[in-house]
Amino acid sequence: MNELISSFSQQLEDAYFNFQKLSLSSFLDKNRNISNIVMVGLGGSGIGGNLVQTITRSLLKVPYQVCKTYNLPSYIDENTLFIASSFSGNTEETLASLEEAQRKGAYIVCLTSGGKVKEIANQKGFDLVPLKSLAACPRAHLPYSVTSLLLLLNHYGLIEIDFEKEIKETVESFNQKDEIIKKEAKQLAIALKGKFPILYADAILEPMLIRFQQQINENAKQLCHVAVFPEMNHNELVGWHLPKDILSKTHILLFHSDYDHERVNRRMEICENIFNKHTTAITHISAKGNSFLEQVFYLIYLTDWVSYYLAEENGVDPFPVEVINYLKSSLQE
Image 1 (cartoon, rainbow, N blue to C red):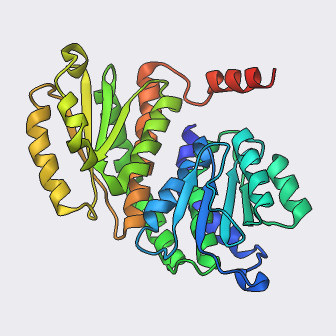
Image 2: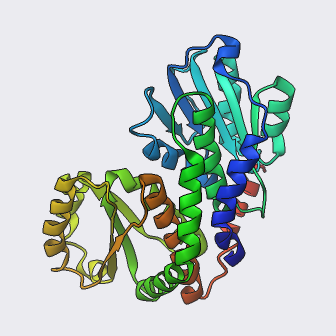
């Protein structure tokens, strides 16, 4: 897992340069007028879609929805860009959705490293973006999938962004700050040991929080909780009362970016006073970078290392996910 996380910058570069070699069709070839985007992906193959959704929030002119189940929205038709993302190519839910998207006549593109999704794409002539496989670990290939998704939207003319510049700056920044990032991650992991992590941020960072939660789940083999501002101010905040024995064992991580709403910053300040009545463990984490994309990548890279070092603190192997494998094998019986 150490090597996989360390490959973050290399994955960004590889995804960019490999995408340039692809021969993809365009909507103009088929006289399509794309009115909405639906991306289907589960687990490590799906979180990339959520991240792209928030990264492109001010760039896309059409609705973008991420689905993580078997069934698709009823509005899908020939004017839908349907993206099937499955690292293995054999994800049950994604295959079911892909079949439905075909019946509804959607414009289909597939992201996968192989399996049935690749077979279907080749048989049907769908656009295909091959995902490079470094190991049988979808969550470790997030940089590759996010970059590929962004480049796809750019290729189809749905967004406009200078990815070469963005990726170059991100890679240079990571290379310069790598040891500092790892040191901070190690310190955070030590502080989180034996605690119940609670992750808060502005809603624009929600996919990043969920990614961190999933990494803690899968790498460190423990639970944690996620909620976002301002929504949590309308419900969850009241819950900071009981049970007191659990509240006393929490460690709150407050994430910040330069793109947070100013009123959210004020809400966090007020809420911190409330949190301090129940826990003394509160840590602020600020994103670094010259763009929203770079800041999101920075937080993902940092928290990926936190989950890795927390696995070390917990005395567990971060790579295997045996209970998920058990579930999948049981479903096949």
